[in-house]
Image 1 (cartoon, rainbow, N blue to C red):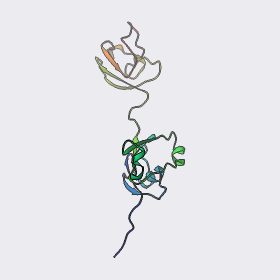
Image 2 (image 1 turned 45 degrees about the horizontal axis):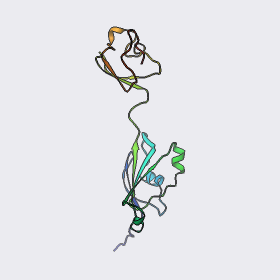
Image 3 (image 1 turned 135 degrees about the horizontal axis):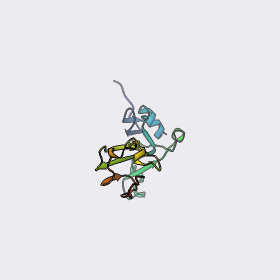
Image 4 (image 1 turned 120 degrees about the vertical axis):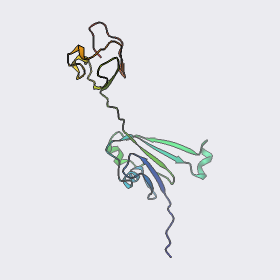
Length: 162
């Protein structure tokens, strides 16, 4: 017969890590330790927001209105994440989120245009200067088009500035 000591401090990790799952931590387990046990964060992980869902221990529940707490952690840099010492307790669920799929320099043209779709946005650009227009007004029809995610209105005659 083999006796195995019961696990004392287990936490789950979900999201953008190599091996999501439930792991046993040391008595002073941290978010960083849990991410390491899960094989590390994937290349497109956004460490600026790591979410911890915590079930309040029975002996502390009279201090809170609800039995669950949400904790948001922010690590602006990888160095900040590596220095982290945020403790985890038994039953915590850590969510590691993926970065946004939307680039910061994109404009998406839809509507009455001949070539709808995403295009690189450069401040002060004109549609005729982009890959979309290339100086060929017959290649596109700006009037009647909707410029999504851009602060624009119908341009004056001959003005195609975004």
